[in-house]
Image (cartoon, rainbow, N blue to C red; front, side):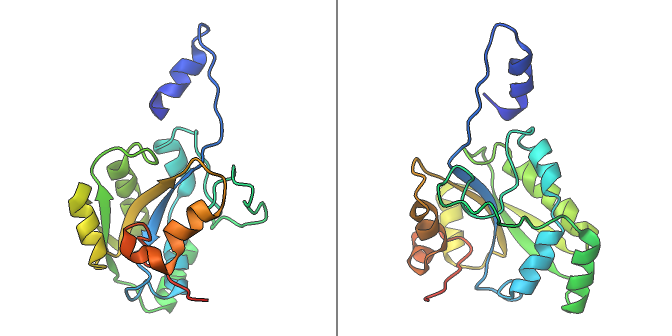
Length: 198
């Protein structure tokens, strides 16, 4: 069922609703090959602007949790000490100003259809767009779909894209290799184009 229907199902005495942790993750990929997003300080400043709790309620209706890493909590390698980037728009604005990025415009490529990892990508993009506007960053939403999206992501010209990953294995390699390895940049799974040869 859709996440928006879970409260209705939960309240129906004829039904028993069972929830279990998923082996999936939804994320906003920053194109780390493209300035100024190749600067970790810029990515951190932008992450501070996103109200993740609002996303959890508005998109997932309380059935998801904010990720502290690329690994879901159900993975045996999940780090319980990992810290979540807290929502702090004032700090975001201050950091962007100190980085000389007071009038930044970014293009956010967004799937047009519901995904297993995100039931409403366009609504998610609009919420992120509103959050970024509060810190002076203009986000232009670019709806893309299917093979067209894959082709555009491969030319590495995007700034941001909404994506996700799901697997039936709790092995961390099922997440790290496809999402963060150098080899995966050209396989259309490392959408952040992040690469550390070490």
